Length: 403
Image (cartoon, rainbow, N blue to C red; front, side, top):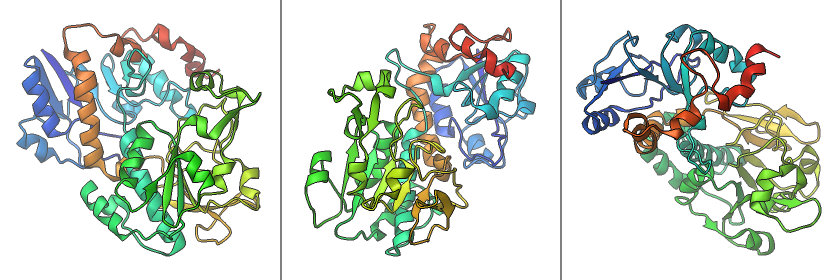
């Protein structure tokens, strides 16, 4: 018998998402007769304790009898139970400074950590994440911000909507200028999530080349791949595989789109060896046109000049003044409006949890609970029950020790 516990989210500010909804729990119990599930009570979840009880899932404050404990965000050190296996987003594999002490505590308490973010297929493709809902909510928030900045329409904040259905109803209020242009970078799960919203709005998709050379008397957008906004330093032909392997050998070619766009939605994955996409000097050019950046990727002081800091669900907007390179009021007429919330799926926690749990059941639980010992799980296991880093993550030794 395998016993899995769903931990109460303990990070501040509180996260309302869950890794498994009550319906997911019922599906798993039917599929895996040797499985037991228990849920730690929580007053902050978007899904109530009573909903789990109604589905026949027991509640327990004590998860010490569980073989595996799963959550969403980082588990606070004081909530970690020594000698257990955990699965959550630890945000440590990139040596994030703010979670160094968490990884150290995991090792000291001899905990085996499986990190969602490094659960990958054999080809390196990520198998699970909230990226799709980051794209969905981020695109909606960007359109809300454009309405506010331009004064043309007003949408309800996503977190005040009951669910995605209400969000989609709000989109009917959007009123773009006839010559409105929007550019989106990224074709992964985040970018395609954003596309789901744009597909529901009265805006026409056009190809990158047409976007640059043609004039339109209706709102249009284009979605760019890496080869559309990067070019080789030596003038050779762009090759996607080479770019991802040697990003330092490329230059940004995004400015040609910045001259044609009113709004920019970054949804790309960015490597710190890659060129900055939109620089501070770009934003100072007299023909720079962008007035609103909805930065879903949210790399701070990185590839998009206007993203100086993350914004929050409570205070989602700020302004970036190109001439001084400083933050100013969002409504300043000379400022680029910025939306850079870094926890976007939290605004639609029930929908995002449903989507995440679907991916867990489809891609991960067969590996966890099936008969075959899975390399997918082992590749994502950062630490062992002996209090050691696994070979794949030995590079984190200096990070843990603070060197």
